[in-house]
Image 1: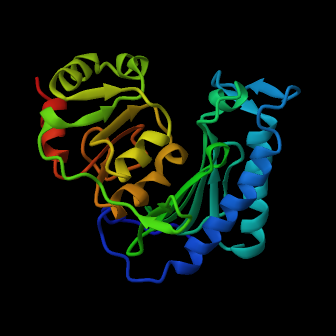
Image 2 (image 1 turned 90 degrees about the vertical axis):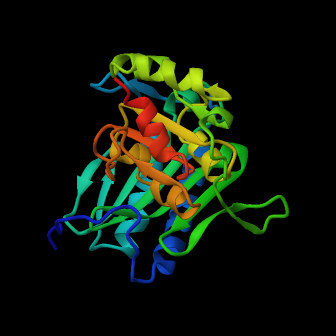
Length: 275
């Protein structure tokens, strides 16, 4: 089946039932966790450097294979776009996978890395799971079904973004100075960090989860691929937030992201794009 055109916005309602897809995404995450944790912090971990100068480990490859094996068995007609093995299939339903987001942390034995699994339908990420097995955390969402994480008692706890409505009272994550410098946006970063209550570079997928939990008001970064952020979109939006590119468009292919608690989204865009 060929890809359909004219993708709706990330906020567009979905009239199908995504419960089975979300249940599968959670099982994909279980398979991924087993593969990734089996080699985490191993002294003999095999690490190589890809053509783009980023690292890849044997665990990245094994984790993506574990996900693809299950998808082939249960959703053979769906497409797959993974960081390590590229695009397979041609469908308006595409699973987008980052087997280990934060490979640099993984290979150093730092537990802040995440498996990201998304299902995009007609170009819109509709299902998202972010699993951080090294710290025992997972977040998940699907359009119309809310965004969730495991609560302290082990029961699912619904996520909601903060209601902070002042930039001056907000807390933000900018990822890294180098990202903003390389994107030619250091002036925007200076305006942002000079205007907010608190700024930190938490890095990778975790700050988006903090945003969905109501602990941050903005996360923004550059040089991101579809597999870096697709799974994050439904988690942020179903928690009540807003997710766009840095320029304010509903896209995961513009190599930038701007996620907020929604109420401040337009104000952040205005601040960041002042001339």
